[in-house]
Length: 320
Image (cartoon, rainbow, N blue to C red; front, side):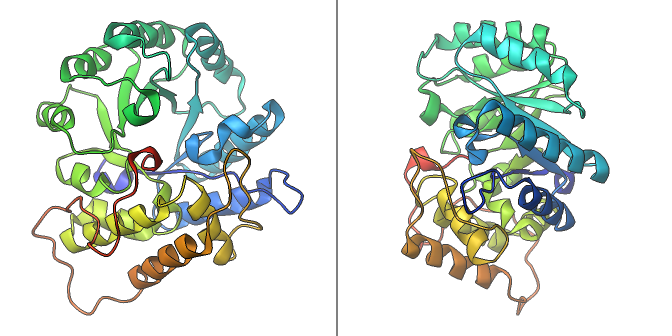
């Protein structure tokens, strides 16, 4: 796949006026981002508020997203897992019964327990043996509390059935530079921090999983295809604005303001985004949608930094 084939949107879960999951709005949103250039969708990621959904709601979300992906020929990924290896293995095994078998499962490094690098490797070795689909490791160290060095990243890549990684450490660090500089054959590396994704694409990442691509999907696809440095700066600034408050609160507020979902509701412990954060993101989005007055610069790679006017968000709010 080319970079332009690898923009994944980790879909939000729209809620209706009484707080119910609105699968019709979810389906419409899924089609919209695919129309605008995304070629993959993620169900039940962090952005979906998966932890706040009951079993029936999770099943409805998964069925809806899977059906759209199959109809559109899009890549279908499902978020799976907890800190417990046995329970996660059972959840993975249950994927075989879904109406649409996912192309991959996105599985987070165990959180809170901090099992150490060897524990993480053993965890994924056990999960890969139980899974009917390939695994994408979700390395998001500022949420899990578990750092991974380059040797551990390569050990994970060597596990049969582990075919990729969503890299979300809140930085362009030495580990990702080393991994992308000598990437294991057949192992996909996807950027997962919206602020830093332009830099990872420039360094050779295979694509990205981007919550901000709910809104600037076509621009992200353009960046992946062209490496336009100026566009990378602007998308990085949008990502910073959308993560200024806990994800996905600002994204939902902007989607609602644009009339794309029925409410901006989130479930506790999240609280709705403030008007200032919503309006700042809307302003950046509107500017991104305006026609360019000069040709795109394609001679450089996209840069990671947010614009000076848009402060970088706290690390805990970065990853999609």
